[in-house]
Length: 108
Image (cartoon, rainbow, N blue to C red; front, top):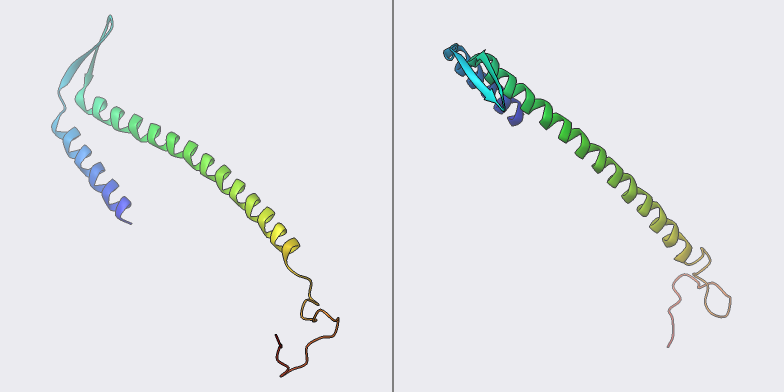
């Protein structure tokens, strides 16, 4: 919820800044010179930043999903090993082959 509020606050600040800066500015890149309104530059920069952030987040989510699947596979493997190591259901029998009677205590 706080991310939504923070995002809306940032959008509001960008909108206020853009409205107040309608002047045409010159941008030089290598040998090119562009003249654009400051509003377009600010909004374009914010949009590009949001798109790059979303793209990087998507790659991170795919990586985390792959990591989770690896951990789930490891869990299944370890659970299988645990089942193989558990004693059989008739492990309650004593060494002589007779099951213990209720109330009977083991003697040393």
